[in-house]
Amino acid sequence: MNSLLIWRRSVILFLSVILLAPPAFAGDTTPNDNARFLAGMDAVPGGALEPLTKDKTFVRHSDYFNRAWSGLDSTQLARVRAWSTENLKKTQSSLLYMFSGPDFLYANALFPKTATYVMAGLELPGDIPDIAKLPRSSIPQELAALRGSLNSVFSYSFFITKEMKKRLYGRRLTGTLPVLFVFLARSGKTIESVNYVYLDEDGAVHPADATAQAEAKYDTVGVKITFSGDDRQQQTLYYFKTDLSNEGTGHSGFLKFCEQLGGSDSLIKSASYLLHSDGFSRVRNFLLEHSATIVQDDSGIPLKKFDMKEWNVEPFGSYVRPISLFQRNYQADLHGFFAKRHPHPLRFSFGYQWRGGKSMMLLAMKEAASPYAQPKGLVQPAKLEEVSRK
Image (cartoon, rainbow, N blue to C red; front, side, top):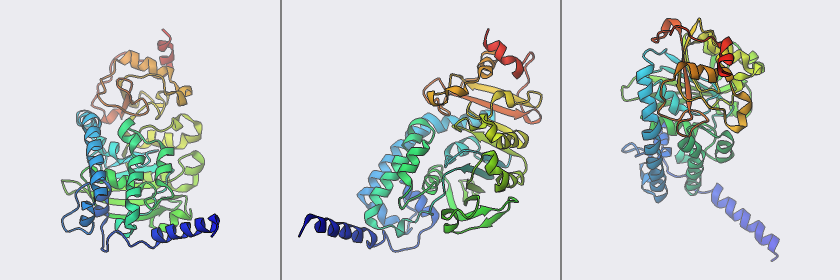
């Protein structure tokens, strides 16, 4: 028997073991069961996945998440929540988080009482996780890939999209949904339902199926997740895979959907400075028109685009030059603004400049909603560059 024949038989045997392996557990699971399992949390007593939580694979997975979450919560999220309590006294019923990827963590920490979260990115939602349908032999590798996809969040506070795609696409746990499940569960949420949706050109929401996203039938596909926290108040999260460029939003119906929500707040973080480009002016102008409050780092809307007669903008932290990848997006007027306004301290990392003392944040509020007094002698954007050169 030659070596080629032996190799072929070995491959066939390997594939038969993987593809024909029995499922992890014979029973019905709920989205909340799966979210808690993926997050390394105790199963709901009597739940279908409870037996799997006794495996060494899950115990190691749980230990990793418990340590990582404890560190993230104490050094980051608890401080973000404290900042929100102090500075966001009044919020709208919906939050728009453009260029978010699956980052529910910061949306929830900053805007915990929001009724409707709208998140958008270029990554597909993927299959709705169902651990009971996975071959039991595949679970260790799937959980390891999930942990790997979250390393950048635990370490730097933002997603490295290329790393997330490498870890989670082309596997059984695919897309943004596994990450969203983890973040919802670890944030103390109980998932009640998960449904695929798509938007038509008028912004209307329609039910979809799993093949709609895979076959790219629609410009804007996504998921609708309903959940509740300790207060039992139902909240809704929409995650859409959509093109936010001018060309994409021109016919996708996404901005029409957002407009139908009424007044909103907005969060922009680690957004690759896309809103600095004229190619994304439609989304930029939409956020300026429809947001009551905008919380962002310097990768969001450039300072010069805020009309200071309409907005009160408060700086937090320290503005330093962008990381090397985005050096061209340095804002001289923003540097002058920080120098003039003596910014409030920022006790957590936010955005690309995650190392201590280098993060910044802008809190922009429409004048009618702002609790901050407009200081006299505020330097207007047109004059800020002159100040920065002095």
